[in-house]
Structure formats: structure tokens, C-alpha cells
Amino acid sequence: MSNLQVSVYRYNPETDSAPYMQEFQVDTKGRDVMVLDVLHMMKEQDSGLAFRRSCREGVCGSDGMNMNGKNGLACITPLSDVVKNNKLTLRPLPGLPVIRDMVVDMGLFYKQYERIQPYLQNDTPAPAIERLQSPEERDKLDGLYECILCACCSTSCPSFWWNPEKFVGPAGLLQSYRFLADSRDTATSERLSNLEDPFSVFRCRGIMNCVAVCPKGLNPTRAIGKIREMLLADAT
Amino acid sequence: MVTNITSFGRSGLSDWLMQRVSAVILALYTVFIVAFLLFNPNLDYYTWSGLFSQTWMRIFSLLAFVALAAHAWIGLWTVTTDYLKSTRLRVGVQAVIILGIFVYLVWGIQILWGA
Image (tube, chains in turn green, purple):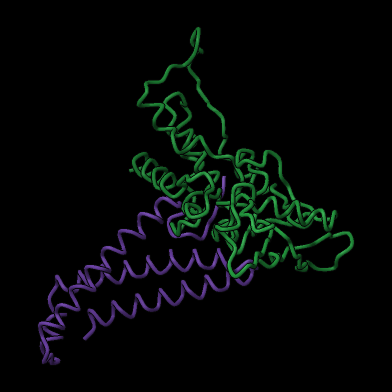
């Protein structure tokens, strides 16, 4: 078995005038390892290679990247899922400014997340113990709260590429609906009135790239549809 | 809060709803015209002008033209705000689109009630 051919995006703004692709030969000893393991093998060859990683088990969301054209988490993506013809091309998440190599500036992504006020708001007096939910009310949060904010979805979305400062993006909208759907949150109408402009929600064209790449199997397009339904019900 | 002054209804929700309502109107009009052509294989001028001399057909056609104008503006406004990043170029193209839609709409009305 020949070595895996890996092509990696390299850019160090302090020394490089432009980004370039660097070729690596990686000996995986025939094992079906994760893409993150391959990155570590490459870092042994060139210690200057920069990438983010933390938990290496698909929980922290640090190592979102573009692997052979598809966004995903390197730590839970086995080579057999992405490698074609023994070649692997790794690029940073598309559409965000590159700080160095595979490391991107997530500032715009977090700004949009902040804009949807991702915390419970309740203006009624706090009860003695806790705000209770029925099992049915709690069920509505399934498929929403699991998001780890890895940005794989938003950076695969053309609407977010073209208008990242106005369109909230699939990750932010999934979290927005997580609080709109929460029976304990009382800021529903304020939240909705912040979303009814032509960009924040409605720039979504429903192409479902977000659903195709989400490493947690979540469905932002469905959440966006639910937000539209709530806006429509609220305004007509 | 994201603001805008050039979108059709100044609100994403109203634009979105208008885009869907106008799409339904245009679909109905298209189906009707195609069916009319299929059921009149030897269509002549008198049948065609007879159809358009009926008041209900003029109302239906005007509704379709207005729906087309709104649909085109909402769609093309979205395209210009996605792809044209220079403000001068974007506003210029939007002005040309608006002018074109206006001309076509008035021309359509003139054809409907003119002949």
C-alpha cells in the first residue's frame, strides 16, 4: 500500500505573500485512522503546520475543516469516508479569514451567534427551586441543544459566505430556534422582531448544505423553517 | 438589527410571503395558458384576441403581470445584494432592474387594454 498523498493549505501571513498547497506523503500503515491523526503525522514532518484541535472526539468542535471539499470534524472523520484515489486535500473552513494554515478567524461566526442572544430570558419572578418543563416541552429542544458550534454548517453556506455580517447563518439560527422553542423563555416576540428583516433569516435559500455537513446530524434547515412559521404566525 | 431600504416590502417576512404568493399566481397562469394552447391547436387571431377581450382574462393577466413584477424584483434584489459588493454598482443595477420592470409592466397593461 502506497503512502497517502495529502495536500494541505498553508499560509503564514508574516512570511508568505500568498497561500499555497503543500504536499505530504503520510504512511498510515494501512490503517483507517481519522483525518486528525493524519494531521498529527504531518506535524511530525513539519512542526510549523498550524491547526486547532482539543478533545479529539467530536465534542469540542475545534477541528472543523474542509476535507476533500466537504466540511467536517477531522477527529471523527475516518480516511475511508473522504479519501478518493489515495488523495486527501485539506483546507480551512471556507469563507472565514485565515489566521494561519488551517486556523480561521471565527469572529464573524461568533458575532452572529451573539446577536441571537443565546441565553434563556425570562421576565417572570424566579421560582423557589427551578423552572419546570413537561417532558413534551423538553422534547422540543432535542435536535437543537446538541450543537457544538464547530461552524461546519455556516461555512458551507453560500448565503453566509456572501453576507456573513447580516445573515445569521445556520448555526446561529438553530440556536435561535432553540430559545424560541423553549417553554421557559419569555422573550419570544423580541427575538422574532430581531429576525424579520430580509437578511437575518430570510437569506436562507434552503439548499441544505448545512444539513449535509453537520457532524452531529442536526437539521438547521428545519429550524429555519420553524422560525419562518413563527414569524408568519406572529405577523399575519 | 439589520436594516435595508431597497427590498420590496422592507421586511424579509413580507418579501418571502410575496415571493410565494406570486409564484402560485404565476404557476396558475402558466398552467392556464399552456392548457389553452393545447386545447386550441389551430389557434387563430380571433380566438386569441377573443380570450383577451374578456374582462376576467384581463384581470387574470394583470394579476400575473403584477405578480411577475414583484417576483422578479424580490428575486433580483436578492441576487444583487448577494453578488454586487460595490454600493455604486449595486444601486445602479437595482435602478436599471426597477426601470426595466416598470417599463414591462406599463407595456403589458397597454397591450391588455390597448388593442
